[in-house]
Image (cartoon, rainbow, N blue to C red):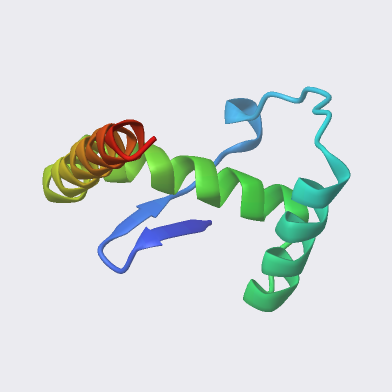
Amino acid sequence: MIQLHPKVRLIMKDDDKAQFHLLLPRELHAKIKHRAGSNGRSINMEIVRTLEESFYRTAIGRVDEDHDEKIASEIAEKVRDIAVEIIKKNK
């Protein structure tokens, strides 16, 4: 059983599972392994939970977070443009 949220649970039956080989960068594997150990889960269950949670967040529309990130990116781009202009003027 994968807990996505206190009110949402996903149960995977054996016939609902698909197996495939996944190649990961060693650093990412180490991060997943560490998180899985911290959460008391297998690496496989940690990956499944993380993927399911990412789809769940998308499904419930974390619009505010996405919107905030977009605004932050736009601000950062404008600050960069201003900095480039100032540097060009001072040359």
